[in-house]
Amino acid sequence: MSKISRRRLIITGLVAAAGVSGLGVAAKLAERYGLIPPDAGVLYGAGETLTYAAQRILTRHSLAREFSPRDISKAPFANEVIPPLSEEFHRMQRGGFADWRLTVDGMVTRPASLSLPELKSFPSRTQVTLIACEEGWSYIAEWTGVPLSHILDLVGGLPQARYVVYRSIQPDWWDSIDMADALHPQTLVTLSMNGGELPVPFGGPVRLRVPRQLGYKSIKYITRLTLTDNLRQFGKGLGSGIGGTESGYAWYAGI
Amino acid sequence: MRATLPTPELERTRHSTVVRVTHWLTVLSFLALLVSGVEILISHPRFYWGETGNVNTPALFILPIPSSRDMVPTGYGYVLPDQNGWSRYLHFEAAWVLVFTGFLYVSSGFLKGHFRKNLFLALFDLSPKKLAADIARHLRFRRPIEEEAWSYNPLQRLTYLLVVFVLFPLAIWTGLAMSPAIESAFPAAVIFLGGRQSARTIHFFVTVILVLFLFVHVLMICLAGFRSRMGAMISGRLTKPMEGA
Image (cartoon, rainbow over all chains, first blue to last red; front, side):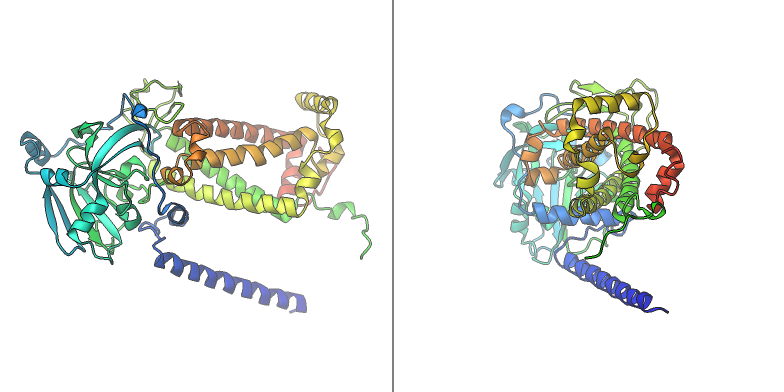
C-alpha cells in the first residue's frame, strides 16, 4: 500500500466516522426536540423528516394569515365524503345533535364528555382563514369555535402528552397533531362557519380546524380527543387513519 | 509559484467534478419532481388567480385532461387512480435533493470562478449584433465551432443563467408559497405573488418553461455530438473534441 493511499484511507475513514456520529447526534437532538414525524420510517421518510423538522423550527409560533370578511368565498367547496355518512350520524342528525358528545381522554387529569351546548358556552374565537386542499383548490371562510388549547386546559392535559389524536364519528377517520399545533391559538374545535351553524357537508356539528396545515388534517364530525405521548398504539402507528398515512398520505401536512 | 504550462489537449477537463455531480443530481431530482408534479396536477387540472379557486368558481384556464378526482368536471367518462400520497412524499423529498444540489452548485460556482469564466457574459458578448448572429446560427441548426466545445456561446450562457438564477429559484419560491405553514411564517412571500392560487399557476408555467428548456437542451446535445458531450458530462474529459464539435 502506498503512502498516499494509506493517508487517503485514514482521512476517508475519519470523515465517514465524523459523518456517522454527526448524523447520530443530529437524530438524538431531533428526537429530543420533537422533530421526527411518526411516519419517518416510510419509504420517503427522510424527506418527510427534513420537511417537518425545518417547518417546525420556522413555524412553531407563527400565525396563519387572517383575512378580512370581504375576502370570504361566495362559493366554498365542501368536498363531501364519498362513503355515505354512518347510520349513527343520521340518527344524531335527526335528534338535532342533542346526543352529540366530544369525549376527551388519555393523558388528562379530568377526562370529560362535552355536549354541544357546553362547547358553545366556552370562550370562542372567530377567524377568517383559508383552507387549501392538497389537490390544489382553496376557499376562504369565517370559522368560530373553541380553541383546542382551552379544552386541553379544562381537562388538565399532562405535560408529558406529545400528541392529540382526534377521531370522527365516521369509522377509521382519525388523525393526530403535535402539541405545537394542538396548543396553537388558531387550532379550533369549530362549531360555526360564516356566522351560522357549521353545515354538515363542511363538517358540522364539530370539525377540528388546523389552519397551518392542508385541509385533510381538518377532520369532520369529531367525537373524541385523546392525549398521548406515543402514536404507536393507534392504528398502524403512523399517526393517522384512512385519508392520512394509512392511505399513503404524509402525517404532517404543513406543505 | 509554479509556472503554468499549457495543458495537453488530451488531459483538459471540460466539466469539473462539482458541475458533473450536481448536473446529474439535478437531472434525477427534476425528473422525480416532474413525474410526481404531474400526478399531483391531475387531481385538479384547473388553474386560478388570487387566493382562492375551486370547482364552484370560474377557472383561469383548464387543462383538457382527465382527473384523478371524480368531483372535477373534465368531460371524460372515467376517473384516474389517486396517486397523490406517494407523489407528494416524493415531490418534497426530490425538492430537498434539488435545494441541497443547487446550494452546492451555486456556492461552488461563485467560489471557484465557474460562473465568472463560463456563464457570466463578457461585455463584447452582449452586443445585439453578436447575439442576433448567434440566434440565427442556432435557428439554422449549425453545429458549434470547435472553441465552443470548451465553454459556452452567448445564447447558451444567457439560457443557463435564466435556468439557474431565475427559473429554479422561482419554482422553489412558488412551491414554498403553497405551503400553509411557510405562509404563516412568511406571508409576504405569498402576498407578493398575488396569492396562493397565483403561486400555483406560476409554479405550473415555470415547469412548462423548464420542460421546454430540457427538450431544447437535449436536442442541442444531439446536434453538437451526443457521445462527446455526454462523455464530457460523465467523465469530465472531452476525448475527441473534433467529433461533431
